Length: 147
Image (cartoon, rainbow, N blue to C red; front, top):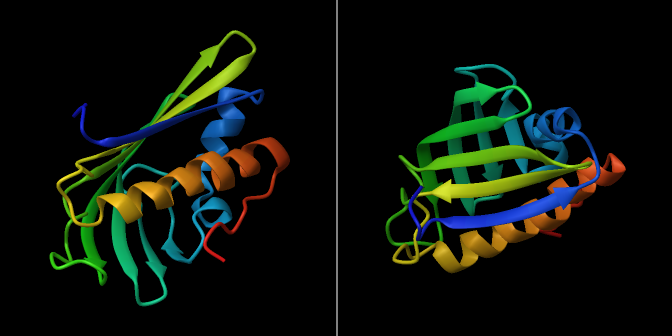
């Protein structure tokens, strides 16, 4: 994976299966409007946060309890000059069991520091993964980090 892409990691006490299921429950941790599903290969879902952000993701890899990859096929970032910076990027979740813990390595491949949205988007991902997804996995409830 590209070294400059945004990445973050969380470690939880739950099983790889619990982590996998939580990630696929997009509506429970990626707060905003989610339309569609992310449960099967080739599923598509749209994400919208008010009039600030829109993106359409297609599930292009799904390895139960190991890996999830979404391809961003369309995007509209209304806070950047290039509104389609996310289009063509990939959102990757790698799930690894380590002893009695499970590690999730999240990478937004192609979200690079030269992008105008990098600061805001990487901060958004940090909150979503390290707070909302982490909370969903560990407590059963995601946190709305944007309100």
